[in-house]
Image (cartoon, rainbow, N blue to C red):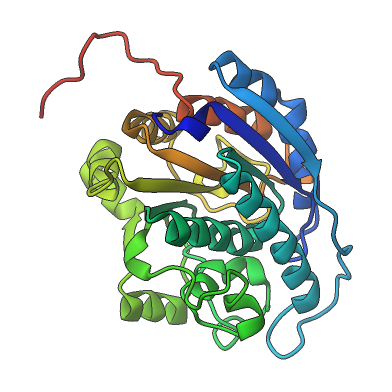
Length: 313
């Protein structure tokens, strides 16, 4: 990593599950801390500033209203997160958001996009997830907003959510690469195609391999690119990471996920990170948090590479 801010990392805990369909992701930040995240980052030579946890409304656990569950609570948490992430970026720090459910990608990524507009940086978002999260209120009966953040970021939804970053849409579909997708609703699939999202689903990874997938996902990333990784822990196969609310079989193996993270680290452009949907209530002895921390360590530079140079294609 070459940016001046990249040696100082700020941990921002967001203990809420207001956007999810199962309780428990609110405990994710502490599980990541217990698994040694700060210590692992320090071992990579980074200065770590733990901002503690943001405060926000409790989960009312109510049915959807007008197609959205917990709309006001989701809005409040994302506004608070937007402000926190933007502040860290303005202070030349690398924010690491400890979720919390993936509705929080709205606040985090809208702040990153705002920073990129102000600084003249190109934005590339890598969305590592089993789900496309491109639903709208019209497409999903659950109303759970953790299935909507990418659509909201692209301007599909009410202004109170799409306008959190001050600009609608906060991001363009061509700034996003989705990796590991394997669970998409039919209507959501049509919407993804209509908006031209670039998706590297599990069939693509099975056919082409993780190395080629990441080469394609990282095409065009250069010294003027702000690379944001939004890592939903259900990206991983549940055999590797059982502690999530929406497990989907057939995800990347541990080694595939390690290669994914190492190739991102190799770019030197990682500038912000979300870690989402870790649910300790569904985990086994904090195993999923430990796997997540292990992968984050690779994302920040730990490598299993023994040879001096990578092989040429």
